[in-house]
Length: 92
Image 1: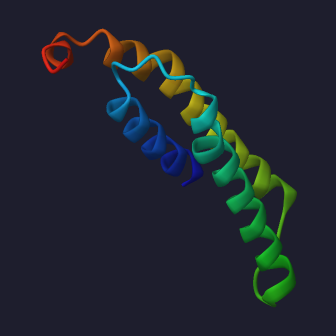
Image 2: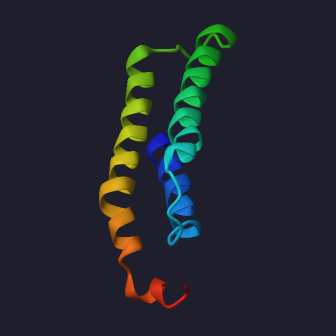
């Protein structure tokens, strides 16, 4: 789920900023840090506010793994394809 959340944010960012030479550092907050903090908050809420669910470190690490996987795919697979797409170049 967190890989999907992060992936959607990355895709939206890459399509909206395809021709701009913007620094990617400002998307790190939205596509990496936010999903990780959200996953941590969910695990803490499960631990402290429910009796039928438990917050577990392995669940949190799985969430972080999904975010990292989505980020790597976005940077090394999607970004080069979007930047080099001939159909997108005619929109400049």
